[in-house]
Amino acid sequence: MPIVVDGSAAAVTTPLIDSGQISFLRAKQLVARAIGDVTDETLLDEAGDLILASLEELSLHHWEFLLKTAATIAVVAGTADYELPSDCQKPYTARLGTNQRPLAYAEQRDYDRIVTVVTTGTPTHFTMFPGTVATGATPQHSKTTIRLIPTPTSTDTLILKYYRPLGIINDDGDTLDLPRRYQYWPIYQAKAMMLSDHGGNEDRIAYWQGKADRLLMQMKSDDQEHPDRDLGFSTARDRVGAYDLTHPYAALLALDGW
Image 1 (spheres, rainbow, N blue to C red):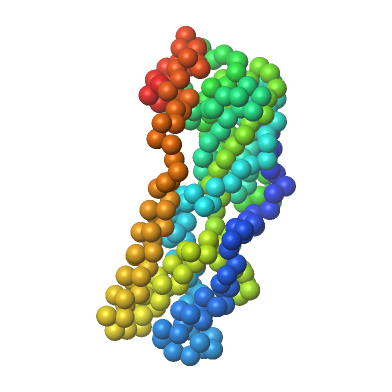
Image 2: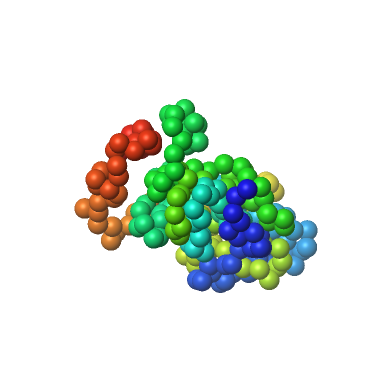
């Protein structure tokens, strides 16, 4: 059985520190304004549906502003499997705290096909697979367990960073769980969709869709560019000496380009 890391965690995600500028009700009013009376409940409900649909589309990408650090996971000698936090969509990085070693990701299929002698020792890799979901937890994906490879022979700590989902909107008073500079994207997108659904003027549709597209492009650009990144930074895979190439799992390192 995997060790439970965050079995008691609720599915509700804590909003970002710099979010909270626009409430769901205000966003609906801004969208409904494109068609008519902002007090029309039918229009507001439609606007809300379109905003939520836009946010779902946004959730298809793993944004860096959604990165989160998990609580330190205690690694137990002889135990390879640990349950992921309930709000983990996808791991970002994993490393051992005591042994000060970054862990590379390995596909379970590659591990099963390449590794012929299953050993124990200090983990060098991790993989993910479906596991037992804690009672009351709502997993964001089908892979809920992280497995350390090889199985550790000593205690350690696992430091995991991962992408969390956007916060769930349930009420009009909830705020859009986006950084301030991006909070108008779902509004622009929903406006273009609402105008299109109601047979609006093509120029108005193009105007709002254009604003949405430009902001989305800026979001993606911000997500990929890091002006202060040191191009000379050397990762662990550049320092082959950090790993024993005679290790039984050395073939997995080759798959990662070590």
